Amino acid sequence: GDGEIFENYYRKQRRKQARLVLQPQSSMHETVEGYRRYFSQIVGFFVVEDHILHVTQGLVTRTYTDELWNMALSKIIAVLRTHSSYCSDPDLVLELKNLIVVFADTLQGYGFPVNRLFDLLFEIRDQYNETLLKKWSGLFRDIFEADNYSPIPVANEEEYKIVISKFPFQDPELDKQSFPKKLPMSQSVPQIYIQVKEFIYASLKFSESLHRSSTEIDDMLRKSTNLLLTRTLSSCLQNLIKKPHIGLTELVQIIINTTHLEQACKYLEDFISNITNISQVTVHTARLYGLSTFKDARHAAEGEIYTKLNQKIDEFIQIADYDWTMSESDGRASGYLMDLINFLRSTFQVFTHLPGKVAQTACMSACQHLSMSLMQMLLDNELKQISMGAIQQFNLDVIQCELFASSEPVPGFQGDTLQLAFIDLRQVRHYTAEGQLKEYYSVYLTASSQSVKFGRRNPHACFLVVQRMKDSSKKNNIFAPFRKNDRDKQKLIETVVKQLRSLVNGMSQHT
Image 1 (cartoon, one colour):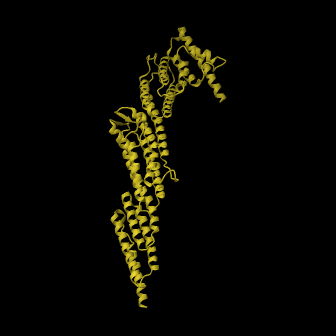
Image 2 (cartoon, rainbow, N blue to C red):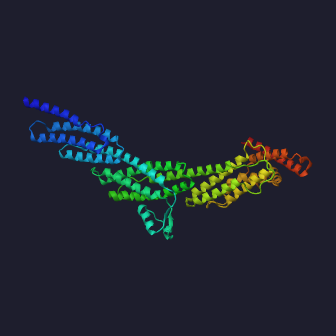
Image 3 (cartoon, one colour):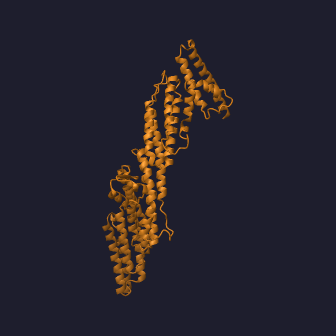
């Protein structure tokens, strides 16, 4: 009777007290002390229940305490899941993890099942990794911001050893050189490598005391490191490449840097294996995907090099100021074009450290863009007349482009591959040069085998240019009817225009 009433009253009151104990402060997630107070209250409550279970007869039972604990555990997990999600400080998340482990181990010692708490820790581990990734994103950005994107100078053996103690670098050829010398990568490379290792250590801290096997911990570390490389570092590299202040020299250095970081990935694999004592050979372990991160970054940097080169060429082209009515040329190439070629020559010297294919592609892309830009200038719809002097001046510039292409600004091109970038301009130059029109007419336009001597041609471009030369010649030579030479030249130009028009029309009908 009375005993049963008291038992029911006691249990009802304790359930109410449990709900109060399980209710957290709204600001609990802000400090580790908030979590510590919360766990202390709960431990105190259940230690009392366990004590009463063992020293009284029938007031509480194991069934009752288990039921009360299961109710409390669901509430605790919901509270921790919510509050931990507010936390952006990895150090605080790590302290929370340590408190949860102590809390779980303590209550397990009193016979309460705590497996669900360790399951929760795996969720919080993902949250911890997210906070780490955000923190390291800032660290990577700062490193890239502070880098000067120049090869690391080392004055003596001591300085050299300091660098290679931070970053795994070997180059037998460089070893043969005397000091002072320069390492190919810039300062950000060893710093990034160090920070990746620091991240692995930080990630490992959460895995400690989780009662997991070395294999599972090894797998966790590799997965979190993969996220760091493929998401965080990759994003930082892609953003860096797109920054306006990153010029051609910096892009070249970034390509070199990513090559060395890619090569260092195998050392990071070994680093993780040494920590966990899990051999990569005997156990199927997750690989690091840094290779794709650095390949993608290199590809983006290469694309940016091609874009920036073309933009720079456009800047030079914009200051070109041809006088299309000039009576005779200056006798030398235009200043803007010589400046442009000097710029390209010095730029391609910087490319000597790049993989051959990248340097060749950049060089070919630049020459093709320059050729196309010059041709567009010549064929501009606004341009109605071109004097013989103007075409001579233009042709002097084209000759300089051809000389540049034949000077092998970047090694590795087969034969005249690079010169082919200017083939259309060369043919316009050839067929508009004074003294060549007659040959053009007699050999190309009237020959039965039109492709034997001149190979590839652009008759449409030739037609437009010669047409404009005809209009200019007509307008400027008001005394031409009285001079046989001028009269013959005018007649030849008109004949060539007529033949070119019929050729162009014929080609358009066939397409």
